[in-house]
Image (cartoon, rainbow, N blue to C red):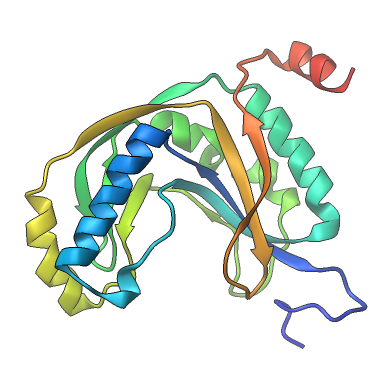
Length: 203
């Protein structure tokens, strides 16, 4: 049986996505870029979701969700809100994105804690957890090589500068193999010291 799908007798396997979402003014600017892209380059395969920075993506059974939420709540409680600086555009060939310049606080959140977080993930062959290595905000993705080669010289000349304060991170989920995420939980960045944090959260 495909491990990505559950039978009625087994727990539901979910795909989880942890993100940071820009505030509304920046979100409107980024959505305008996406609409502009599609008006100039109407590639159906380029349509993307609401703008966000992906932190990590992983699979796990829904029976572990309370533990996942608890661990991420503790992690977020120790993080100070921080500014995210956005500037100009970049390309992975198949993806056009807004470049994130302030990468250190984003990488510190999860990428540098892989070992500490590894117990939260189910591991399947070909479905390893993914951690952010190059923080970015996607404008268009799934471009063919020909499409990417055509649009990149245009977007490489396009200038943009924006910033927002990251005050929380959001855990999204969907059934493995399905489309469309729902919000599982939101975690505020509180900047609390570890000893105080745990007592405050669970007293």
